[in-house]
Image (cartoon, rainbow, N blue to C red):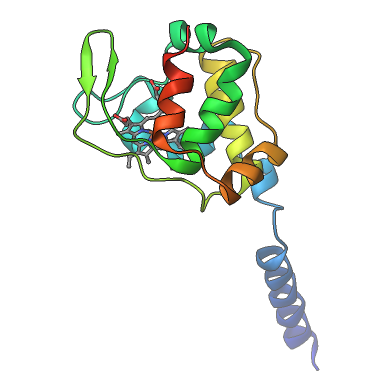
Length: 152
Ligand code: HEC
């Protein structure tokens, strides 16, 4: 191998290594960026909501009221999706069913949940990978999720 070929070979190998090593990129992605990529198309930038489409996730009243149940609720909705009618600030959201987001890695769903609960709503509830994996395997029904949401 002459030097130039050798150099190309080294560069190519480095690129293969970089692009095939799992999670070296994922580790850098913040909850905010994951939210933007995964949830914001429906819930709006920073979860402000899109009337007629999907409710705001900036909803301190809801997450403060749910307290520690907030972790089960957000993990449950992310893994089962949600249907029915939700009313926030007098606006009804009912036209669309949220599809489950179970194809997203559990570690990434934890980061997204942390962004929604902690950054957007100041809640200290937070689901972990164990809970999310459990709910991926056995999703809650939408009825069960609504019962968690309605509780006082
Ligand atoms: C394809 C659109 C869509 C995507 C993508 C989506 N959602 Fe939703 N989401 C909805 C809709 C629509 C509802 C309301 C469903 C209903 O009316 O029952 C909802 C409801 C919710 C709720 C319940 C809100 C409440 O007030 O009770 C949470 C929490 C939630 N989504 C979180 C997320 C998160 C986190 C992501 C990203 C991982 C996400 N959603 C991605 C459409 C979406």
